[in-house]
Image (cartoon, rainbow, N blue to C red):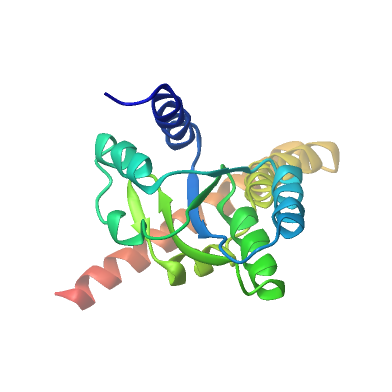
Length: 186
């Protein structure tokens, strides 16, 4: 019969898995209480949840979620760092591990995919969630801004025709390149 504490911890781990885009597994053995508190503060400022968990309970939730390959990393002490921004979480943990050699990054989980330490390291190079949102908004807004600018300056019909002509030209160019790539592949 599982204890009430274990049942509660499984529920919390399950919640982390369901509500986070990325979960990183760390080994914190050798860190002092003060160092762990500094790490927790840095993670809290980035909206990252950091929780020490039992390996067997993490494995129970991983099996429920059909995440394969995680058991190999569930050795020794394990803390889960979970959030929605893979770049931010990996940067914080790797920067901290460079200053404090006792912190080890074991692995990560993206969706249902387990990634090793090198995969987690690659997350650092990704743009942050805020940067991706800004780029998407900029990409959407640029053509609209161009259209408004054309309509406000000079002949609106001529400007509108130029905007449409350029867009059609770009689509035609892309389709031509795709056709050439397919021909080259055959």
